Length: 129
Image (cartoon, rainbow, N blue to C red; front, side, top):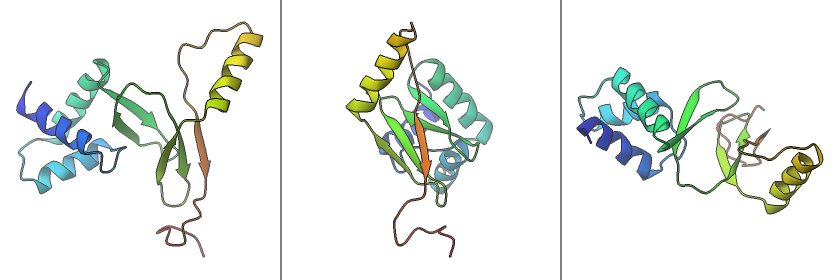
């Protein structure tokens, strides 16, 4: 395990925020006075993804974000105004997806569900007036 890998893993484990872009991780490294380049961050994240340590997501804005793969399945809901991402696991949705796949003659191996909406937070930093 190299120093860049350890530092990037520490940032991902801190979970603040849980879904981070390569650029966001790079910015945190700069703020910590770490001499790790953006290309190295991308390379390490790609290696982590190939090893199954992180999961890459492409939400509405098209930017790739990464989260630590903790093994438990969950889905996401994303605010179209501020970009806030919430995770959720809803048994009823999972059961319905399995029923649909079975009816159509499929066995689900993997899936991704992302819902998009507008958060109701009064202090949403991007709410349009």
